[in-house]
View 1 (cartoon, rainbow, N blue to C red):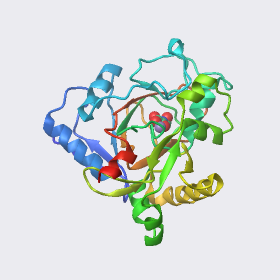
View 2 (cartoon, helix red, strand yellow):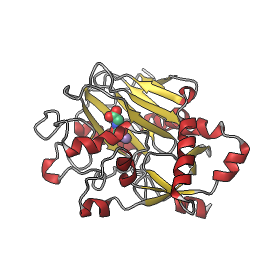
View 3 (cartoon, rainbow, N blue to C red):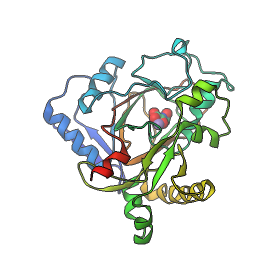
Length: 295
Ligand code: OGA
Ligand code: MN
């Protein structure tokens, strides 16, 4: 059966059928998916009963995997999954939901804020691939906003104003927004802010997009409150209904998204229920600030 992709909204999201991603893909199949990603920015696959090894193998079709170190406050000995699998569940190593006041849980609540994965890393992520191993039936949706459509809809004066702006991103900022500031000296050092351009150009399509994320704490050269107020305005613009696809999970869905052109967040759910979500991340290939200098 050939691969087909059905658009899910006007701008963002495509539902893939006719492909079993638990087995190795042909180069043509990989090219079809890359092209689908360039068009839709988010692709949804149903009924993919993946093991962690199969999820990593599928992800490697799109580039090297990002290591999870530096992106969380979970100690190596407490990990449930290996170091190339981001544990996006609400579970501890014993597979039980974390206590309400567990600091790992409080830290992970940052995923409730709109963000782009690894925008806090000097070289931020290309794709994320999230597999729903055990899903909840109320809440716990993942929402995606199209930062290309959001950019296109800005007026010309705003586009000109933001063209060369550079922001500082850090997990300190996104967690600080939620009032989670209980961090060790080592964690603070690990979360040292990095710089990212506010406007990115997609390497294949050439389309521009807003590179927004709750990890942003300021704009270089701006007073912080003015920067934050402006970033908030841009973010409110960017997550209007018409730019958003809201994914209601079925067990064994895999959703992949392009972090260069989208933001996402998870919605609230009953955290006494098990929600076992596992993410692989395809590494990006350069710093956004270097990209534009070279252009
Ligand atoms: C992620 C993430 C949201 C979710 O995997 O990067 O933000 O639905 N997940 O758990
Ligand atoms: Mn995320």
